[in-house]
Length: 240
Image (cartoon, rainbow, N blue to C red; front, side, top):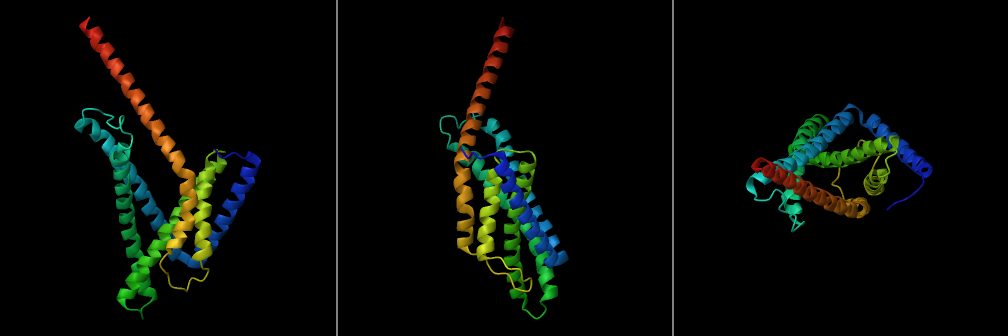
């Protein structure tokens, strides 16, 4: 459990939020209209990702009682949750993000073709793909910035998770990737950037996610047993 005073949390969160907003504002002003549209399209890709990930898992939850003798077959083996719900969620996330990525890539391809007329089409396409990759990374940072702002406003205790998912990747990106020069051509993201940026958030979140899944499984089991008792009582009363 992470424990610190609310006063310290307010100072820490407000400081990170103000710095992030300053950096984002400066970046968008320097990038102009194209940067704003790219940010909007990359954020749309994240929305598609969450919608499809949740939608695929909910679909499995509705279909499972129809094809299984038990509505909660993962009681005896909780690891079945990974295959039953984790896999569709990951598949949905990749599907939704790829749809948004294709929209973003189409816009960036048109943008690069207008700005870099002297470059071959193959090079323009490659640069557009690299730029789309970077914008998706930045949109992920924006997502956690919004959650941190909301969590700080409502004084939510678990806001430190949003801080970790924002600060660690942003630090890695700023240390290894960032540039304030809009004229430089995009480069592929370094693997070490992802390793440095995601290791701490994964370490902080993994245990919480495991406990959350265990809690949800226990709640589902208790709810199913309660529903079974209610149905049994109704049948007994009808027979009587």
